[in-house]
Length: 285
Length: 135
Length: 132
Image (cartoon, rainbow over all chains, first blue to last red):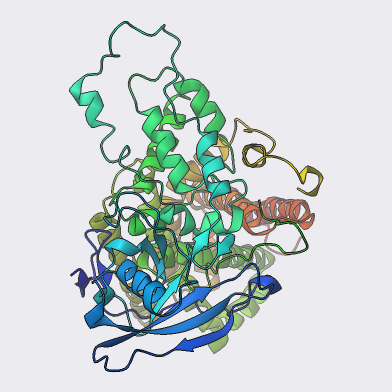
């Protein structure tokens, strides 16, 4: 259980017990396209005889219906259901509404499929305890993504930005007959960056990516860009930095740090981006 | 990828409408808001200098506007905005050396910025009132 | 972009390619910020120290050589930093054709204000405040 009263958050899995503001005080439909406005949805009551009930408000969207997204309310029997949000979603799909659609695979926080926005923050549904959410628990898809159906976002652009940073080893020296050598200290530098599961919680939670996501690469792609920049075996450092040094691709990062706060693997994209900027500065002087 | 066959575009999931304000995002937007507000105050600063250069009459007219209670509220706001942007700016300069990125450091430095801004505002106003009272 | 309706996802991400620039803006914003820390603290402390003093004493201080130099340095650093900061804010939020006009207005405004401030400081420093 990671609900905390602490003012100083030490790790990203901590959930504050009390929040002053659940959302920024902006008009709910300000700047929202008409086709994206969320309408009230159905109410699905708990089965009879259920004693421990938790209410979930879940974003729904059916592309075949031609309508707007809506917010359905589900009552879940906690005695019949596992402890995680993903367990609740599976319970709803099995027992209440089989059309509820979401991505999932490993159920242990390593594949990144079930990334979504729960109670206002992005995290993996399989590692977020139901007890850590409020009443009602508000389940939305990853923020600022085009939605294919229900809680399934279209990650095409996010992966295109990842592809653009060329996430593979690039060398000029010919491949050796054995493995490319790397000192343990150099291998250490990759720790904290290679573990990214590409869930895109960070990119989806970055306000700068909300406003400029078409041109700003976002924390996920930039963290991986740093992973390859800092790999001692890679020989395309100059070219990589050339492609990154752009007022929008890199420098839309204003160190807001929502990314580091929300990473479900405890990684630090903010720090990676700062290292990239530092490298660009160092090669100038 | 945004368009499927006919007129329908896929809806965009809500972003600022539902995302929880956290110390990270709140202090960042506060730094931006104080910065833009200070840009407006810079205009007033130049007008004040021009008034000072134009002679005692223009200057005292300016001072009386600042001395009125709406002017004093503006000045208090400007003082707070200045200290918040100054402390936030120093926090940013530390980050630019790629230091202070652990989550506990981010939160600790963030709260220090908030507290320091309030304290410095109070100290400067108290000092100003004391010194004005003595002269 | 509408003219690239069938562009591939990677093509859309690439856009017009990397500008291979952007460091100068970032660096200058930081350099002016570092300069502004002591300059603004000096200015704020001076204003507080002169609370309640009369016009003559105040102008005497403002017109002294050291103050005038520091004041001009403050104006330069302040309006340079402001121009750079406002540029970033405008680029973040305005994406239509109005962006270029907003950028020009902000930059010209900062230049003009800095010039007015410097001229005023010089006038005070060289003593010609009699409206001549």
